[in-house]
Length: 303
Image (tube, rainbow, N blue to C red; front, side, top):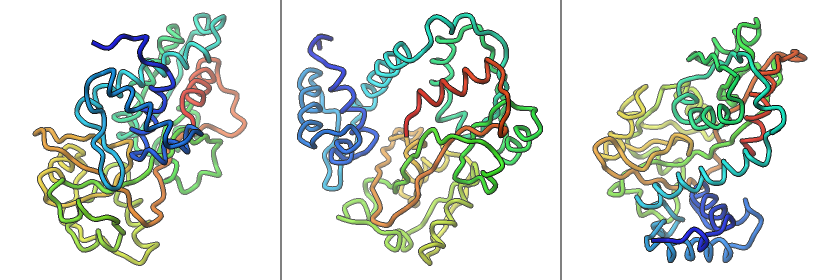
């Protein structure tokens, strides 16, 4: 069993950065250290834990099953420390009231739950009135004052200039495929390479619109075999080799419901990231609960 004093916060930060980036070199750039420092930190963690946290591949690294479990604990430790250092301890328990928040499907399912739990620990007297809405409805409700803030994929927002906004995360888009797929062992994969294979198109949260935007910018068209609004159906189809897809890391999970592995690969083309952010009325005087919620998310998420 690993001893807690054998593991440092630095090692956890470097490990989480590598898990997010999928490459030790990119993780090193993110945390402003050398690649060898990230590599050493991960190796030290693996030695202490007695398991492999990453599968090393020619194009980068992917988390093992043990790595996926441990990264959740690592994130929780780092996030709890960040909250303890950043929250206004003398005010948080005194703020009370309701904040009205609209969020879309993928934001609710893949981004917000853990952050809401952290927010409630810091602000137990604030009630969150959370509404599941599509992006257009959220924008309308924020504009007319029905919502205090909206959480949307701002890279899909056509009239972002009408709102004050803040980008919370920029999630890279990468290729999802089964380990048996013909592209799995390619040294480099371009969008033109992907165009030669069956494609699973996610339609949830305007995924089909954002997909067509960057395909068209390169003069290419995906060979769509299936369209689906179900992320679990998409994962199952990809894992069983019925096609590939390109989606953001925020949505990535390594396993289908049937327990089949889904691999990810970087693309050589410049694919724009998915940007998720907050929107609110310009010059709006937000209530204390809404202001606390907005500031918490802005501090908790760094881009």
